[in-house]
Length: 523
Image (cartoon, rainbow, N blue to C red; front, side, top):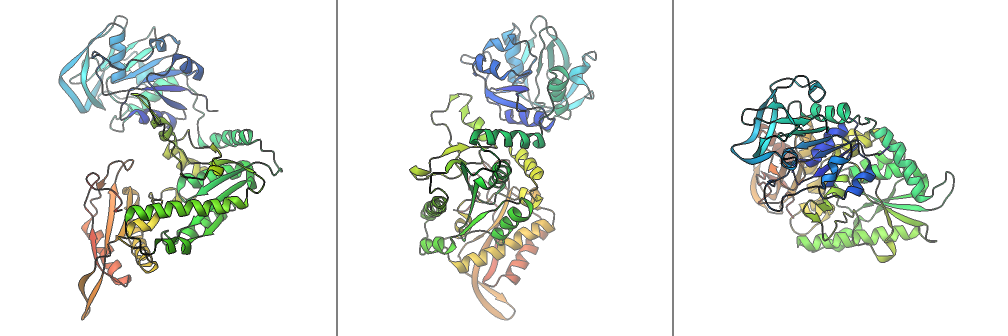
């Protein structure tokens, strides 16, 4: 099923992953490789079409990124986007120059050649497209025709129909391009005749067969086992469910309760696995062990180190019970496709390929062979897969949660009393976000217990209690983030509830720091 239909050569554009995601939304299985991919490897994938992405370089400069020119001799259609278009024009003898009037932002696409309806099928004239270029094609190569233009760009879309080469100066993959997704679909399905069978239902069947083949699993036999650490997050839960569908009780899914989870989190995870996913989860309550080791520790890095090392000890202790005769051969991980893409830079193979281990620092005896069922999927596809597997929407759309848990949301020493305070405040904040319809509009939201006391007045009594900070950010991937501009009325409602309902807190503040200069978490 996972036969590559469209192959994207990446020249370093910030939008490259969007090309693959847009096409996959139409059921077209698309992969991304660096622009310098060997032609033999490209041939081996046997794509039905190739897309050259955008990029930050200029084609006329020394050292400009150039793919193997044999990509134009594979007898498959090629589409160039932005830098990809400029490379095509330059390669075939056209002229690319620095534009006097650069285009960054929205422009109108004026279709000139109505007879080329295949590429523009369903695309209205004067639709909005997104430009992001400082160079432009001044002269098109021989054999190419102009199909569309914009206000500042004469050659906005060009094509050589005989050689099946198409090129766009704008970015069809971004949401700002009104009919961009349709143009990509027209190229992939209408011109390349790509299959549209890629979906999560088919993926499940394909992946189960693949997992059984890799592990040598035979129905009804107890043989090779797969170890899987479950955090309760989307990725690890989907991995565990998919593996259980494939190998049943030969899966060992371990969930460690560190005592640092959010309110009701353990119960929610256990209920989901029991009722929705029908997967027998092994839960280890190690809360006393973790809290005992964290006693008196105030330094954030020391807290993280203790939690990481203790998790491995607990995980190892449980794993040994299931490996008395060396039955465990595989360790499951939730590696996603963006992790795979990032392992190779467009500037050349990374010196250190990212390992992206969900469970790092394991002892030598646990260095099992990796099995990564999600390594071909984007995050939104993992959520679709979760829906197909029966995961509840409330779990699929949860905000990210750090591995060290609430320990890094309590400033200073972690105590059971402070954890209880923080859990209650955090639960109120999240509950109100849902009530006001704001939860899905922020990327991450949580409370931080500052362990800073201040004077307050409640009724006729003076109080001297703790301060909690509420934090909400908007982001795409967490690398950068801006604080959420939540309504003042909402913040007031949250503050009132926390102060009135959580004994021990008399002051609520809101963090308006973006990343950078701050980080999303406080520790």
